[in-house]
Amino acid sequence: MMKLFFSIFLLALSSAYTNDLFLAIQSNDVEIVEEQLKRHANVNEVSPYQMTALCLAAEFGHDKMIQLLLAAGADPNLEPIQGETALMLAARCGSLKSVEHLLKEGAKIDTENEADQTALMYAAHEGHTEVVEFLIKKGAKIEQESSRGLTAFLYAIRGGHIAVVETFIEHGVNINKPVKTKGNKKFGVKSGTTPLMMAIQNAHYELALKLLDAGAKPNELSSGLGVLHAIARVRKSDRGEGVLGMPSPPGSGKVSSLDFVEKFVKDYGGKTDLRLREHIRGDSKLARKGTTALILAAQKTDLEYMKLLSKLGADVNAENDDGTSALLAASGLGCNNPTEEAAIESEAIKCIEWLLSLDVEINQMNKRKNTVMHGASTKNFPKLVQYLHEKGADIELWNHKNSQGKTPLLVAQGFRPGGNFKPDLPTIEAFSKVMMAEGIVPPPSPKKDTKEKAY
Image (cartoon, rainbow, N blue to C red; front, top):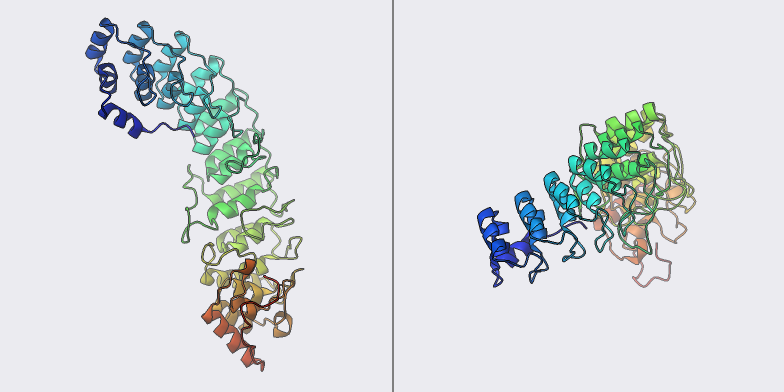
């Protein structure tokens, strides 16, 4: 991360270390700095907190200080803090004059910190267009990559800095170059992520349109996801708004997600039924080969997005390679944890109601022998159980064991995905009521140590 905490500086400056030169720079007191330099203060001294006077001046953007220190012999290429130079700090601060003076006095333009990040990346990350433009004209390497495979261009995209992004485009950056993660990186941006996908994943839709105008490929799957699939995840993160975890990204610009989708399909050739080529780990169990954006939107119970995709030509009856359709996804199939996912019961009912209004068949079974009732039990949706029964869900179809050896009732009784035993009494009661209405006596819950396979 390109971050240098101000708290460290303040702590350093308020500690027992009371170097007058550092204190004067921090307070931007030119007279005291000049006096200290006349007394031959050590301009290259490193503080106990690994800060040089020049780096401190650059961090605060004190250009006059930088000129004085350079004239007094300050080394512009010292790297006291994790390989960070004064040029990097000035670039992050956005002080064009400071950057100009440092380069004039011999600062190396492409020096890398411990994360292989350069001054150009610092400036791009913070959105300093003038500094980015100046560094590029002075020869900074545009395609240089950090240890996580990110270029300055990608840092600008992640931050949503349209003007900076346009600057890179004007200078001939590769608009479709994907991230190639260096080494075995467990965290960070996924290898194969394109600039367009980076913009989408951070909800920068206006910026994404700029990339498309510049020639970004609309139907690329190198990251594993298509643009429309990614939007389903961004609009309603499985661990986003209304549930545990971080919210969806705030995004930027004047273009909404749905406005972008409409333009993407109509003006740029985005395919509504583009299918995943591989299983995407770390998200819903439905993010499997063959899954369309509409299936993922259904799993998120994002009815607004589902309707738009259908309007734009998406097939509401499409199935992934598991045979799971939007209807099965909306019922709850693919759930990892019902308490940590975006879908709520009332939304699921509305999505299914809409799909049924389009003559989608309610009595479906995927290749794992799961039905809508298996989905409702997985999500602990008792009202949905009753609704599906009223809409004609056939008990002869759904009251059976799926490929993992679980009936919908057994799942409700606690034998959940991954062996997580957690009964849900309202859902058990809903299934019992429906089964008795059909003349079937609900079996009692088996012992927890059942020999049946975990669902």
